[in-house]
Length: 179
Image (cartoon, rainbow, N blue to C red):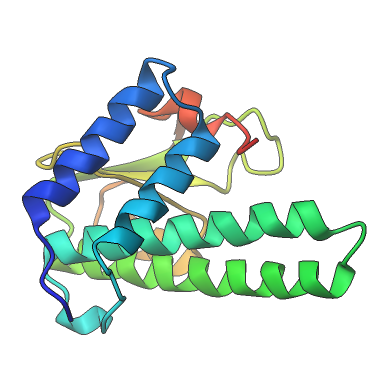
């Protein structure tokens, strides 16, 4: 795996988050710029079991962005290219599975300490009560989302999951559509 300048990664990530929070860019631009950065640094995903915390964060971001990219492409192509749309749909799900595997790695690396997790309030009633947030309290801006039942089970077993629905720490972001 190519070495990643983690300081530069986090600096770029923070700049994009800041720009998103003040309305300089929208959610779709955040995705595009984040993916462009990972491509520019030549990021290639590696084996999950070999990741330290920081590299797992990069992998999480990559898999999450790639899943969202493919779901956006599915939406664009669903009416005039249904077979292409289905391919994007399947790829999006594959990336979400890898994202959730990376989430598990992050939880294992911190031994479920310094974490709080809970279901989040959603404008989408289909997602409310199924989408949960994992906040790493000792890390800057590390907020993950999942619907994976295995992750939920492990968080609950570790005593860090509250089943009370709460507002997301990034409420505006999670309740804004891509485009």
